[in-house]
Image (cartoon, rainbow, N blue to C red; front, side):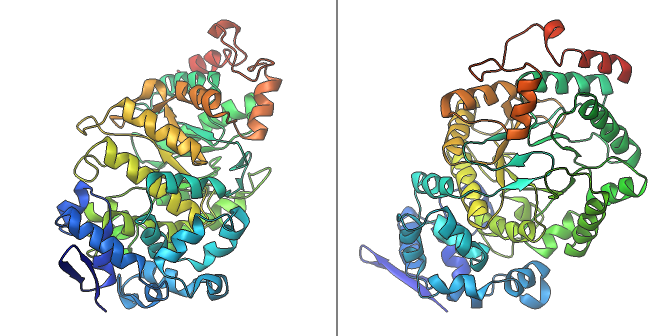
Length: 465
């Protein structure tokens, strides 16, 4: 089915819905690389005009990736909730945008609608929104999840403490954990990207975090971001695993590049649930996504970066995750060229994830060869905080020395809490108060390491040696 719109005296015709979505997407280098971007701003405006008039029902019949060939497509179609979709089934994409921005669309109404929206519908409506619209709507949506801490509550913006080390040296990892805890980071998860993916290395890191967590009775969860098959092996060997991690994408072929299937994810979830390690909830999955992942695998099927990214959220919501985050600028300028493109992509991903019912977070990050800097990341972090982002990733000094990219720092957690008035997860905040880590004003106390309540962790660092 073709779609068209006229801008000025020029009539633009788009052969199918996939093309309309691609041409309507805000400018980004990855879409140019894929050959799907609009050829001019005039064509982009025409595509947005055409997209605004597309009936939401059209998305249920559109052939983005053939049903017979793609298990993600089958998941999207087979789990679509027709009853939840019914209240908006008569609408166009433009009318859905207008409704989402109206006072009628509060958090409860959007949550009821969420199972009735396909990822492609979410992507479509985001393309008609300004940045402020993405922030305004996403802020209304609350997605609560829990394991040992409760995430996503009103006024709560959590952090992942990411203590990576180039060689997984226990002393270096523990030193970074100490540093992060002293800034009140880690209520979403203490999560390590291992330098190697072996079960032995993964188990050693899990045991180290668990020793710290149990010694200081920290109400958080741990995760070593090994491949899901490694995690399954570690659980079979009795490792103290809280969360199962996996990178995911929006097509079966792209997920095959990650070495995963939906059945494999289900197997891992079942194994983690059987351990019953949660105290206030049983959400055991942690997923990461990122615009450009499917294109880099040659598995985007002609879709633009953002549309195929939202399809990954269908995979995520099928497994009731505790955490999902986009690593928005991690793949580099080939996909998101500069700070402006990274900022827009981060807001899109957060909005679409929340609209589809996910506890969406973000790694506010960029690679060293991108046209971006920490000022751009400050802008994105502040925008995401205003939008009610579930959590963001923090690393020592904003510089991940193992993965070689720039992210947010432990200090940025203090910035967000002061400027935006956000708090850690309630269980973690209560722990900080019991430990004497915060003053009567709620701010983290500035103390020398030797006098700090978690300063004794230095003993564990020496023990780890």
